[in-house]
Length: 431
Image 1 (cartoon, rainbow, N blue to C red):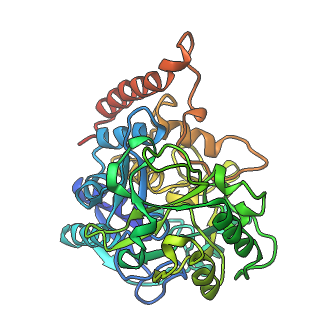
Image 2: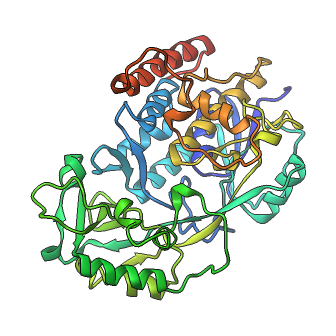
Image 3: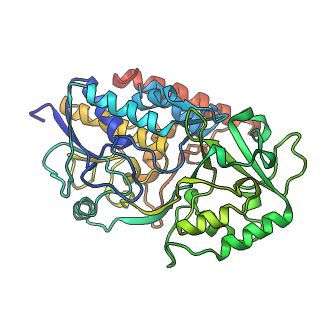
């Protein structure tokens, strides 16, 4: 490349991570963000890196895939992971953030970086001749989605994604709730709302009969299954899912338990864990108030359901995140077929690493498949006739030979840690 600039479309997690990495390496970045001129139904603020679903960035425990991926990002010098920790709220072994604080901090970091120019425009076409990172997110503008489909030669797939309601802390009837986390992982980080069998069945009947915003059959990603869709699978489906009544000491024997997770540092707001929903707003208030501790529920942000778009990555994307037919165009974040906040950050960082290498006239690179990031890149680009977005998980990693089952998770972490450290040193990447 003759110049030293990169265009990034989308100021979400992937786009901001990529912009901060490139700018720190002396690359001039034009970061295109559609807000405030246009925002999707899922977005509410004008800030960058707005988190719209759960406020959790999943587990910090190193023997989980989420914890392993976070360690890889630390080795690669991720800025957004650092900012997330600085804006964390108590959530047991999970990394949850104050949404507003996190977005404000990322926005400030981006705007303070002299090599980044934020351009508030609605991008409806992609210039495949210039070095571009498309990180517009899964609810991007229709015009941009059409441009991306034209480049890929394949119609983008889509599924419907749902977000959970956020309520005030003061509306919770504390005489019917208790603090604690399942199996002691978090102490008072979670507020629990127990139900008896009769209370649960009354709630269940109301839930499966409630009116929904979208009535037609849609493809829903399993990791964001609306609570009413999950409930329709059977009367006990929720009791084996988000309402499972296990792992609580000194709580008696509740029939079902809804957990509330802190939404902000002041603990004035709580998120209904696992309660992503497609119910109409009035129905959310009516149905969720049947949970005894929430009889006076005050919803400050209703659950919403929206279309999430992603490309058919096995057909059109290389493992270095470049389009097969257009080598100057990268796709990162949930658009490329990964699911999750940390996964989006990771792919944005990898796209930035490779864009900078291209500017220097070097070959693009991909982390080894023994790492979660490398395995994700391999998974989303491998032939797959029924491709669906993928989270970080140990199941996509190469198997471990001769390792006992009880020691396998630690072995996955140890192998990943060694592989990413060596890769970061060899490629000149790292914090």
